[in-house]
Amino acid sequence: MPEARPNRTSIVIASKNEGKLREFKELMSDLPVEILSLKDFSHLPPIEESGQTFEENALIKARAVAQKTGLIAMADDSGLEVDYLRGEPGVRSARFAGEPADDARNIEKLLSLLEGVPLSDRTARFRCVIAIVTARGTEYVTEGVCEGLIALSPEGDKGFGYDPVFYLPQYGKTMAQLDLKTKNLISHRAKAFRQAAEIICKLL
Ligand SMILES: O=c1[nH]c(=O)c2ncn([C@@H]3O[C@H](COP(=O)(O)OP(=O)(O)OP(=O)(O)O)[C@@H](O)[C@H]3O)c2[nH]1
Ligand SMILES: [Mg+2]
Image 1: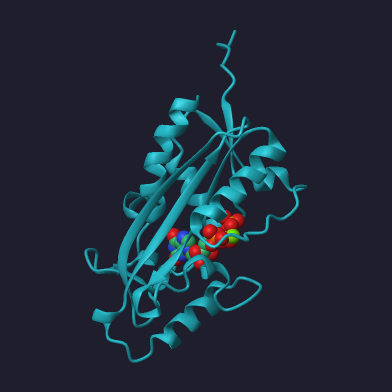
Image 2: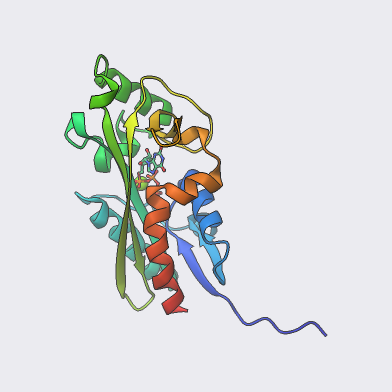
């Protein structure tokens, strides 16, 4: 007789972004939880990200999914802050070049706004806020930041979003030239998730 396996707690990642889901699945691979995503709840209506900050948007997404599924929901709201553009595109990162969201057009717009700006003035950071909301409505928020520079031209084909133009001087590479495991050691998402993992473990 096979040994009975205790039921695993399920967590829904409240995201439709394939790149984020891939990173979270790897980050969460050691946690004793069943990982679900919005793909497992395709009947849910789209969530309007009407907040002015990453925290507001992360909470909007996690609250909606926890309420509708009755499970623990974890949402990530993230984006790129470029100092020369006074923090833009920020919370508008996904749709910087308009609807529908398009990574290639976003990169093109970013590079054209920075044309002629030397590398030393192209400082930027990725910021990620993770919200966890339980079925009972208890809320937790964590945050992670990863500093870098906006490259003069795209390099690399891994990752997603702005990764091909996010240059990490300590690696001499863009984020899109790092494999998933390396990105998951240093990224804004990984840093926010490390704190989130401690919270999740206490909820199990
Ligand atoms: O190069 C990148 N590497 C990253 O690691 C990263 N993290 C965030 N971003 C950018 O910021 C938007 C998030 O917007 P966002 O949090 O609303 O997510 P999203 O709309 O793509 O999916 P969802 O999770 O809301 O369903 C994304 O689309 C990207 O443009 C990243 N770009
Ligand atoms: Mg979004």
